Length: 169
Image (cartoon, rainbow, N blue to C red; front, side, top):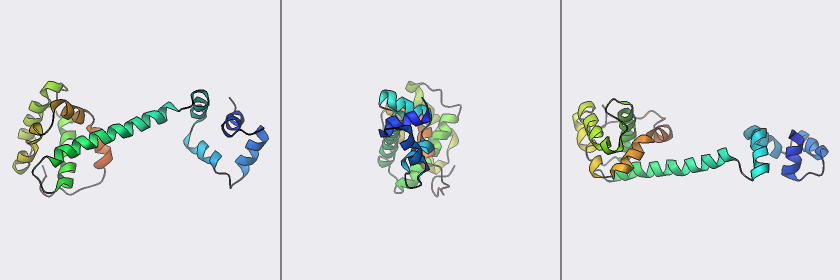
């Protein structure tokens, strides 16, 4: 489908001439917006199906990230630490390291035992007490889902430098 055909259908223009005059008019930003953020294939897909699959997937990803954030918050809220924000970021960092370590075998049934071994072998003494509370505060399957998808939170929350006063390896 040609570019002008797409926009004629999207905007209900009577002819391609209207599309070209809109495209040239600096006050008509809708076409610039669509061109900047959507490919020709995206717009064709929308015209054919009424949706754009990659946008649908982004919407589902947002819900899933919220779910993983909720798991993180549940773990943090159930611990006996005063500075919950600091613990939250430290927990994400620790889980990322755990997932990348040789301790993590990727078997859901072993995730708690492996995490405990990781904490005992790789964490400063003052942090062990807090981290070892986790297996007693959350369901194993939920924790496994959290570990499997921790990169979502690593990008979401752990991008900025942060000082860990009590939670430093």
